[in-house]
Image (cartoon, rainbow, N blue to C red):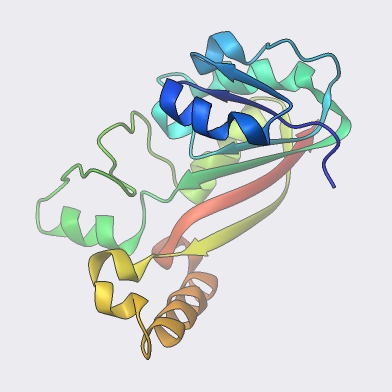
Amino acid sequence: MCRYLAGVELDSEAAKEGAPFFDQPVTGDLLDGISGPWKETFDVIVAGDILEHLPRPEVLLDSLKPLLKPGGVLLLSLPNVANVTVRLGLLFGRFTYAPRGILDRTHLRFFTRATGRTLLEESGFRVTSVDVTAMPLELALPALGRPPLAGLARATALAAARLWPTLFGYQFVYEAGLV
């Protein structure tokens, strides 16, 4: 159970919608708001789908270090730019931004499993585990998200991601602590 939940959200509408779920929500720019009004350090900090939107993600990682308790955990997700869909696009001369996904228009930085680990380690974190998420095949082919194909499609995508994470992984989820 969570004793205290804090969050920073740039979009005021999203912040208003999420506010009831937080003890101390902050609306505003992440780098300005991260220092927040927090009275204590955190056991867990979740940075999901954030670093790829920043021109200098190491600045945010440096800002998180003093907020994490000794022995605390940083959970971080990064999209896998080496995913098969991006590789095939490059093979055919395409690097097309999209409204969402790995090549989201708002992504300023791109990561592989190795470069994500390097960023964390160079920022003073020790990676304790890396997990992979499956490609959401149903976004490209909606029929794969409906019965009877949904279960099989999800299981196949997850098996492929676990078998060859650098090719079929959609995102990498890092668990890290302070060095």
